[in-house]
Image 1 (tube, rainbow, N blue to C red):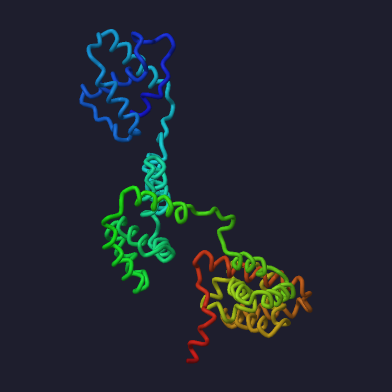
Image 2: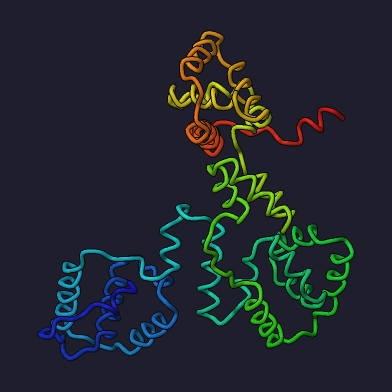
Length: 354
């Protein structure tokens, strides 16, 4: 029904000089009279108030005027091809579970806060971890006020996640919130909303270590080692995180289960696999270990065929060999990204030796 006040009447149909709002009120009154259920609560409160005033102002309306208003309304309905939700809140209702529940809750809170000037829906819509961070950053008095505004279940969870001493101080602080004025709570909420509820937009959906690791995965070995060596000198922590995001042919024997090898090489071109294994056998110790690991975790018939193919290839140029090895590791990484396999932890060997 919120669209009644937005329908444009034809210039020739004034229905007795009635305003558009009065016509909308007449239509609503007719629907009420017919017993039709109208979801007026979905209209903005300002429109609901305006409609109430118009309904209250209606006295007697002659039949020709009622008929003219109804005819005009039906004509407008016939001309409408599509009706959109009309507001972000209604759009969220229609989207239902098609978007993230956390995002939907946050958007609702933002809309309600902007409409009503109340910042607290946005604050209480923060995740539990975000609320813990807020309470650790603010004073115990502010933390007590925030805790008081949360739903009971969420407040209990947040309190349980806070360090013991901090949780006790905030709990005690709640005894001192009884005299806080509504205006003070509103102003505190506005300050908290500015500081904690507006997320900055990020340009990348992955961290810098993951992005650089993905680049180095397909870089020549010499380039990769040069970059990592330089990084290790400038920022050892970042260099270590980058290494954790790198998976090369040399990592196959320590990061991939033997039983997963057949699945990993299934989609690799046979010629590329032969060249990759051949280049690895002639490469570093770690690369050679990866090649032997692949050969030992496939059928002996297939392994023998690959060894024969390698002999026929003869010496393999390093550049071509690295490209072939990258094709194999790309297949492994793709399978891991899809959830088809799980990498072994680099700490597994240490744990086994304990």
